[in-house]
Image (cartoon, rainbow, N blue to C red):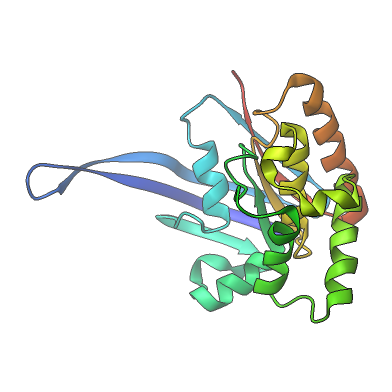
Length: 213
């Protein structure tokens, strides 16, 4: 489902008064791999080795310097902004810090409804209500959570909200950017088990970035 060929991402180092390029940081250099539906590919490495850059480049949140990313046979590095926006419905990300990735001024209902509106996936109030209930059931949160704000939840619960947001648009592939590293050890296993259960139920496949500290 996802095939990466010779992917690279280099960041220029600029110096001098004119800001000329004086060097490059090779964050990702000539990486190739394949992930099939239902599989998880884990990337382990120390902080600063380019793991997160690679994960975000897969979704073109960061533009690659070279190489190709084939999703369902299409090279997404060649897609224009409109086509890429449609493709992102199938490709989502769960960020490392659940609190930083949630808007503190939005309720859970607004957070989960926003992607549905952007991609025009629901057209009636009853459809929105049904989908929101499905998402809460997936991540094992109560109905009352919809009216609350991110600061009212624990770290583990906030990450469940982030997972629900990623699931909202019916994705097939999810990048997990150290998705449990910011959580207490006692909660990490619960979130990992949840992700594994969702993978089986929804036939998802993951690219999991993990630190080795």
